[in-house]
Image 1 (cartoon, rainbow, N blue to C red):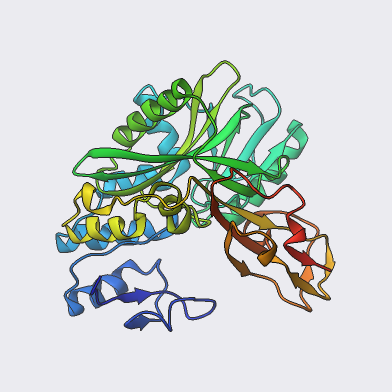
Image 2: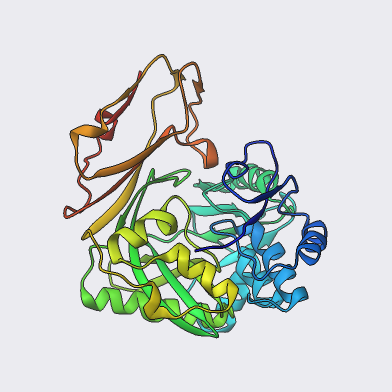
Length: 367
């Protein structure tokens, strides 16, 4: 695209230092320091692809420098689950019943029916999330959520039974375009860590329309007007749509970066950059999809020390890419929770929906 890139990230564990034009060893939470550098550079746009905790800095810098972004108010209500729940409730959007906690002092004054879900208000990727079946265990789960929260905030919310999806979209000046809906497969209780994503979701036209209509209401309620969006929803057996949360950024876990373009032909990354730079035109980013379906699988080996990794991805032509997270000699923890949950990622694109069965370890086998 001919763009000069200036990237901010902690040096420890960053994956950008060797591929950007200019790298800065500054935490994405240091918004004043990043603003000072951006003023010195004279940037034309700022964005982050799939990080909730980066969005306050992104929109603070954009707001201060008069660049394209979302408002500071929108940033608050779209990055904090408690503030989001309040805004959605005011807008009449169906979401789980909830209560806020800054310390583990749950007494169930709210008369929740168990089980309940406990989560940090300001994290993503299932970090610090627990399903709890009895009141005696709630404060322990709240303590865990608070420990994973950046700002020390947690919510307890009612447990919703249904099928899980995410909705990928892009907005310009308050006009929203839904790009696709993603099927999601998780580990189930108690942590609900994501194991698979598939596009497009295997639902009928009426179900698709119901999810799309509610998502558009959410984006308006959260005042997400510019850039990508990623909205997580549940659909119950009777077809009711419950909104779990929405963010003004692309979906992570290869959803925005790989899957959308493969399954729709829409260059989501290019569009996101163009919106931030102020010259996005929807028709410019659509191309002909080369594949009917796309998706990812996350490999989760059994606990123990990894002795060998066997790569057999050439056995299936639909597998287009993979990434190893854990190598030989690494100890695998027994707890499947949050960011430490995965050993490898498989990305597929082709004309078969979900071409790999649950025995995906046959393609990347950890021993």
